[in-house]
Image (cartoon, rainbow, N blue to C red; front, side):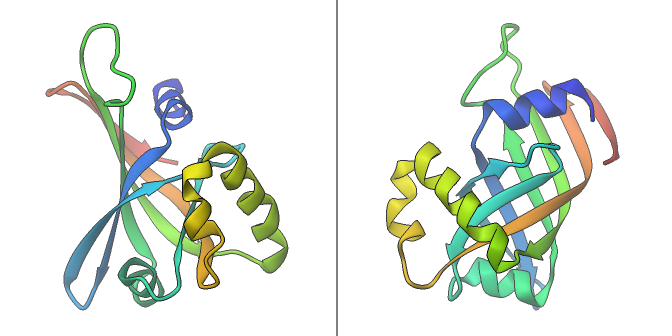
Length: 141
């Protein structure tokens, strides 16, 4: 993966998750955890949320991550739009990820402890990287 993609994913923890169902788009500001191979994002929601219902109806998503939290030295905002696929997690995968979320993002305690919470994965499949308003690069992951 391009070093710039890995850097923006590692240095940030917020993304915009875009889902769709019945022809209606829906965007959600989310906190994510990044997998060790930098190709999967882990997110938490509730099973009854619109985003989770949309994911079940249509597993294809778009995810935006940008550098607004950590601007570059030149002042450019770098953004990456990823295409990805929703992946439910096996029960054995959930506890370690939930524990990591709780340690790194204590502000998510209410949703992590909610009886209806669900942790899921988004497998990143392709990207469009914008470095400022003009410079662009895209590819498959």
